[in-house]
Length: 101
Image (cartoon, rainbow, N blue to C red; front, top):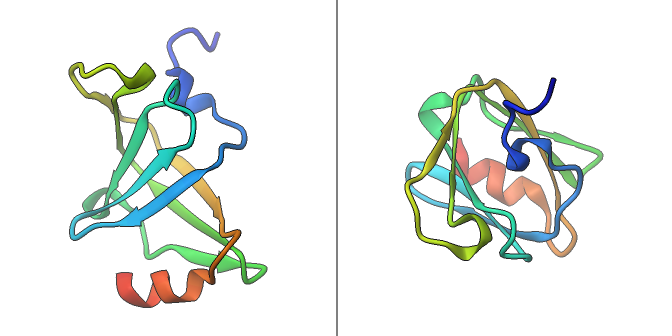
């Protein structure tokens, strides 16, 4: 039964921006119906890895979902080990990986 899993945890493929912050990685989807996803570094199992020179994979034990449907509300803290895959369309992921390390 997937009713207990957040909609944001059931994402397939979304376009958006990936931002590197001092304590986390933040994904801002193009469509405001999906929440902004914040992935704190302290909950990542290891440094993100690069696959096929365009995809970054990272595993996190927790993430925070904010502003779902563009509504300011309490943040949703998701305590679920998740593999996030980010495909870079306009740049190389190696620069981001080197900044994280």
